[in-house]
Amino acid sequence: MQGLMQDWPLTVDKILNHAQAWHGDREVVSRSVEGPIVRTTYAQIHERAKRVSNVLIGLGMQPGDRVATLAWNTGRHIEAWYGIMGIGAVCHTLNPRLFAEQLVYIINHAEDKVILTDLTFLPILAGIRDQIPGVKHIIVLSDEANLGDQLPGALAYETLIAEASSDAKWGGFDENTAAGLCYTSGTTGNPKGVLYSHRSNFIHTLVTMGSDVLGIKATDTVLPVVPMFHANAWGLAFSAPAVGAKLVMPGQKLDGASVHELLESEGVTFSAAVPTVWQMLLQHLRASKGKLTTLKRVVIGGSAVPESIVRGFRDEFGVDVTHAWGMTETSPLGTQATPNAAIEQMDPEAQLQFKLKQGRPPLGIQLKLVDDEDKDLPHDGHTFGRLKVSGPFVVGQYFKAEGGKILDDEGYFDTGDVATLDEHGFMQITDRAKDVIKSGGEWISSIEIENLAAGHPKAELAAVIGVAHPKWDERPLLLVKLKAGEAAAKEEFLQFLDGKIAKWWMPDDVAFVDDIPLGATGKIDKKLIRDRMKDYVLPTAAAGGSAALAMSPEPKIYAPEPAPAPVAHHDHDDDGAWLHWTPGPDQTLDRTRAEPAEGEAPADAVRPFRRS
Ligand code: AMP
Image (cartoon, rainbow, N blue to C red; front, side, top):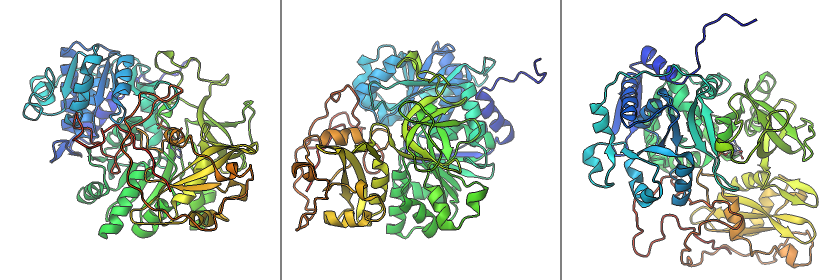
């Protein structure tokens, strides 16, 4: 027997319709790419998004056509999203931090017909224009005056919008219609497309609105630092209008000072970003003696949150941190570390240990922990296993069936993460399956060691990789990038770790480096580090296979050497995986110039390590 309730397809256009109808005068404030702060409302965004739909229809776009965006978080980007999705076209978010040849691959693979781009990325598009013949139109999210003749044939968004009607029909199609497309960062093989449906995005929105998940509400002012081009800004471009929260869009300026200025000037109460962004904000606040007068909560995910960030926010600024885990394939939010009733009874220090875990699944996400033979593992908080996930906003197969069948017989997707689950249902990522260090048949978590090492007062960033060892197979090597002006001996770091990790987890060596490369999504690029360190031999390996620590009697002090000449980036590394360009320290892009200035590294050059 069928239920007798209304057939109301869960399509995302209804989210912006709702915001327009019930929160129409709520503000959407953007730091525009051109510079000034631009203030609009949900009503205006809705009206302009309808015009976008008519512009696209006028350019011949049909339901199912892929329309790409290459853009920062701004109000215009939101208009583009809803304008594309509202008519059943597919919004393909392009990540500008990828190499040009990766973008070419992705644009051609997706068969994008139109690209809406910010001015910032015109040099990138100019450089690849002749390699993306399927793209019929490039629309620049600005006006004629700013566009000028920078990219011949490109159209100015504001001109098109002004001329288009705001009367467009949205929705009216099946809720399983594709709405969005986002390619994974592709650390193995080519990037693969995750094709979200209206239904999956709608359900993800409802779930993440829950007070134990993002928990935002109409009275909040939300600043999504996490980009719309990576994992959908964690759904905030849907959930903020869904609840009628004020939205503050940071544009391209993601450095500590710029984020702080927006937090204070716009009265932001809630924000979300990866740990590196928060690290930069905290450093800026400490250096400038800044305050956070309105911010109440931040969600941190994308990579594990270091304890120092949670403590910094809590103890110095009175801001609550929620740690969350997810991936492009999970829309992206999969777990969040909000306390359950038992944890809430614990003292603050005990609670902190749960805040540092990646957390528990909300309704709609099912987790499984299995060994290499796919047998279930205990939820004891200690046993590591492969983390698998299923649910209505989890990938079922990749776009164009790349990679073939990706679900197991029970319909679970292997995340590629290695994790533990505890008695409270809290999941903790201990590694990526490919980064876990296999020492003497046991697994060592590279992430756990590097998070602890990153808490050393002299460390700016830390990374741990497994290095070949004749006796133990692999042993951990700790790489540390020191804060500017600091010097340290290896032993300082080993002693800092002593007592915090098992003896046999202790790194066999410490290398001080001037650069820990981050990938296109702001995470430590272990693949590139392994590549750079491929000729490195552990002292314990050279000394005949003893696992004893290589404690040199005279500690080698970090001493910067002259920087070697930059090495040009090569297409792919040896197993065909993509290498990533390293974003600048402020996480903004400096790829606005087609050619580097004389004597300067090209924007996509990979700098080699210096090490002591
Ligand atoms: P992406 O699809 O690029 O967002 O990458 C997803 C991957 O990022 C996950 O599979 C994890 O390996 C990693 N990740 C995401 N959130 C966290 C987190 N809170 N802690 C540790 N790793 C994370």
